[in-house]
Image (cartoon, rainbow, N blue to C red; front, side, top):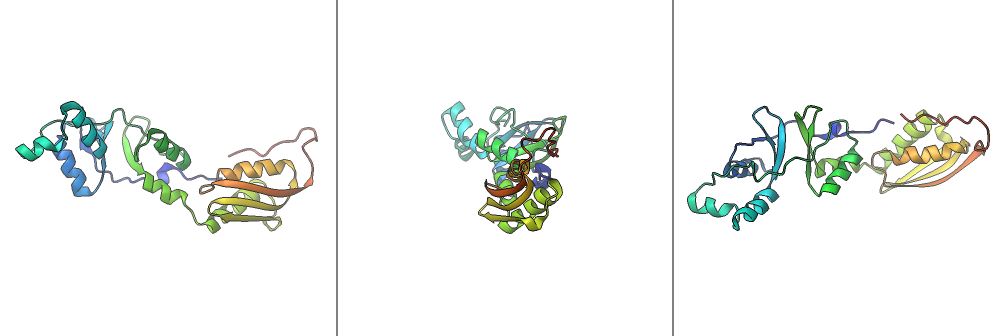
Length: 222
């Protein structure tokens, strides 16, 4: 089964900022583009951190005891560099990261965006919580169709007419009959890998119990 990855949903045209930029410049850039975070690049255009509105609100207060805009509102500007304020190193993903794994990383680190980088640390794009929610929330009928085709027809080579796949709010129920008992476990495991699947309920029967036969070869995962 072909699983969608970060590469399929990430934004490639990313607004970035230099590590040498000031807090005021960063704030203005966020407001201008209506965004809440900026990947921070060094002189060689390598990703060195991420600056978010949370960083601006929290870290400058920690350093000065006052919110970051205090000096700006009085003097009309804030010349502090963003280097000490940004989050570094940045939590990143590769473009071939599965969407579910990217979502787990966002949840683990309690962040809202992930810069996407290549092996050398070059910024390729950015993926947000909203991107992943849109991608992972598929229509139930589309999920059912993909499971029927990818899992049963292509992977298990089972006649689709022998199986019924029902999906409701991402919960999959598998009914019908497969040729061999060992196929049931494979079918459930492969179904769990499908995008948009929250849980799997299995009610499959089998024609032959092959679990006690010698030299049973399981279908290879791809």
